[in-house]
Length: 165
Image (cartoon, rainbow, N blue to C red):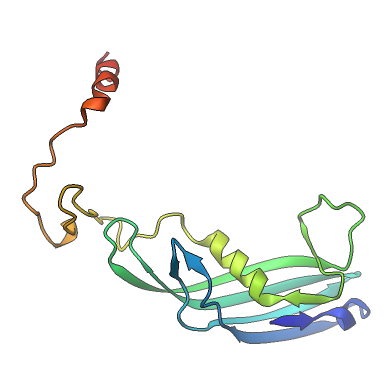
């Protein structure tokens, strides 16, 4: 979804509100979809001396799996973002601004990148998640599996010797 901000650039002090429900079902993490419900976005754009400040909030439900035990997770999320938007730049290497030469801001693209950058690198079902047994694959959060996990990798013996010193 694109928001037309072109008229806003011509009127200092002017504001423009926007809201939408975005379908981000094609956004994937490790091969599976993250957003099975629409992502709600609401915000306001303000002209401040020829540049436009855009502030918005997103509300979403994240659907993924725990990175340790692969248990399905559903987590609601609420985040706030702000950006400065301009029609053109004198220098192209300035990433403090979002350049929209046609005056149209792509909310889906902006919200997707903002949300993904704010997600943790590892999503867990809980801080105490024990993960899966490396031998049999049992979920250790549901109980012990009985496997002997004290066996060490012989390739790391030399490293163990170095650490003893």
